Length: 374
Figure 1 (cartoon, rainbow, N blue to C red):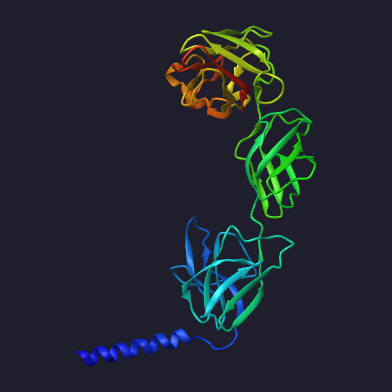
Figure 2: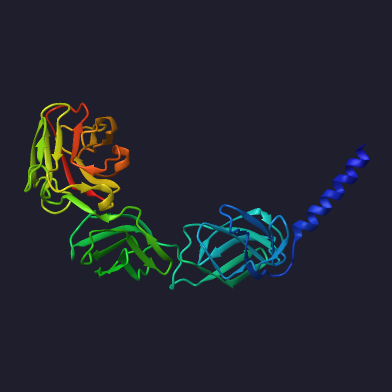
């Protein structure tokens, strides 16, 4: 038994030493390749044979050139070359990137490009492999990721007003559009902020930002298809202009300058009891949901005096309290909400909107601004 173990151990050590030595010369890079090829079927990928230009699709061998000259952030690739086993560091544009030594052979290194790798025209666009025998550089650039839009303010504005778009990877922005209408960029954009003028004729649209990395669409839409409050109540609402009514258990100020979201005013509602409300009855021409193409209510709400963390207001459409939607009200700050009409009972026409406090200790004041339908 001892003799067998000694022979096995000798053979194992010999195999390890043969592999562990690797090439004795300076490293070289032949190419950089994908690790897998994404199939046309969503969420399906197939392994690439790194020594041949093939990809297996579980049925047959398909010709596929996996070689790349540019990389994307947060993606894995393979370096193919010689004398790579004793690699100690990989750099891209001077930034160290991660590789697992267990996935290194004398001909292949699997590595990951992290989110911190720099990109752009000012970079060297070089991939450098450093081993115990030397180093080698290879032409390899990093593609700029698509821009990311996290928010924009104000939520609605008139033609010529300034909208600030906030996000990331706005490097080299080449254009901003409100749907298909180009917007004028104001000042000098940064990598995280762009200011634009609202084009004429925009009532409601999505915002698109284009950079060398691609085009991104905002998650939320800008503006309204139908405005109820924008520094003043629209005619027909809350007793303003052509009819309507307002109430209850509260006092309302429709031109309060204390906490506007934008512009000069917001609606201030001071509730007299724990279930006081801002109730806005509509007395204008029939507001048909389908005909007007309305899908959701959009609003901004601010917790003023008397509001504490966790306090809520319920939004009610057409007096349908059985389908009310409760929303949190943040003390000292505006919170933006978009609520589907279907979640509020799916009314075919609109005749009333109510914001009722839910057990909030009175007296207390909340503010509503930028209210309408999208």
